[in-house]
Length: 155
Image (cartoon, rainbow, N blue to C red; front, side, top):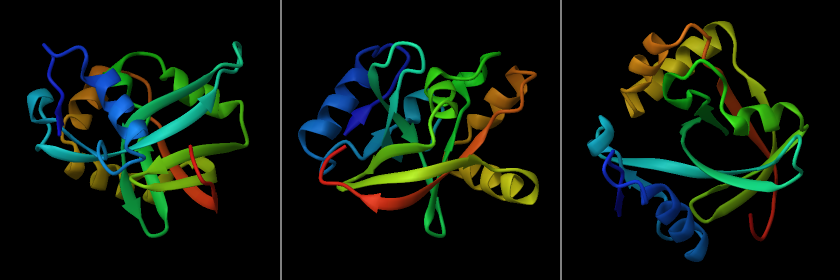
């Protein structure tokens, strides 16, 4: 299992490579204890297309499962701007994502109100540093809900 730490700048690329090369059999979990997390934490791969460049991008994101939906947090570590993957998603109607060995196409939306509060609390339980990220920024961090609508053979 890959361990994410501030000193190990290669963990991110290694994680994506492992996830893709093993088709999710490995790489689904990352040890985030070195970054303030609880330890092994589930991740998915989100595939977006650049809104300006048109280039495909794949990013690993911590997720939670809420009913049939998956939730991800557009925190960017508490930065003042949204992450690029979120901006790219805003320009698209559908997304593609991989959860372990399962590949999906789906719709997405930003959770609001009570749903947002419920999912946010669940995601903070999965990864406590989200509270620090929220405190570090004046923007409202988007809580994104991914709803699978189809399956694909690969990401």
